Length: 113
Length: 115
Image (cartoon, rainbow over all chains, first blue to last red; front, top):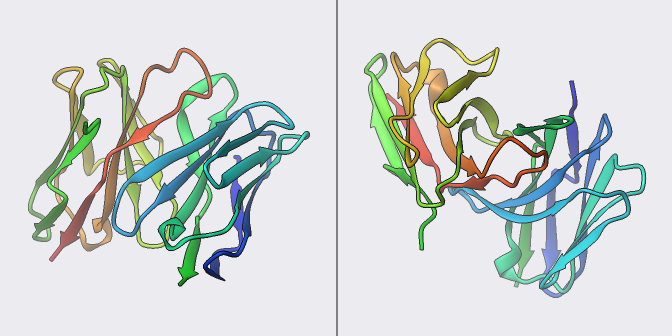
């Protein structure tokens, strides 16, 4: 079965600093999703990547999917306290069968003012 | 502009007392999902509905059941909650299963406490 591993598990950065979160899959990724979860709340969809080498940005957050489609990175530029939360990567568990997502264990981000 | 709504946000129940969590959506999506997320763990899919077709994950305990009376609503029934069922329960929707890489939209979750 496919597994997703995120690193680091937790991260504390000073406001204004850049940071990167990685998500590595044990199998080829056919759809990679990044979500953000605030404590005690649901998941907020950030971005979806499909193609090898694809890169998407939204405000100060950039996500990339490597050419081999087994790793994705989420990069935050000039972090702010509003970026704090848990970042989860998710992937389609099976090729050509949407619906079942598996998730990484999450990366907890704290941003110190 | 709420899209996926879960009620209640917090639910306290007693050991063994049946409890129902509800989810509604205004997106008119065909697929609805229930995930269980225990503390500091990744969300784990329990089951999903594609329209009225129910799909149970192989390792979902029989203690968990679901109902979808119409497109907008989906319920999670826990017949005899145990202490180990205390978790955040997340409802999600997606437009379809017909194509891969279909984005799922999540509700705010219901945190269940079992006393």
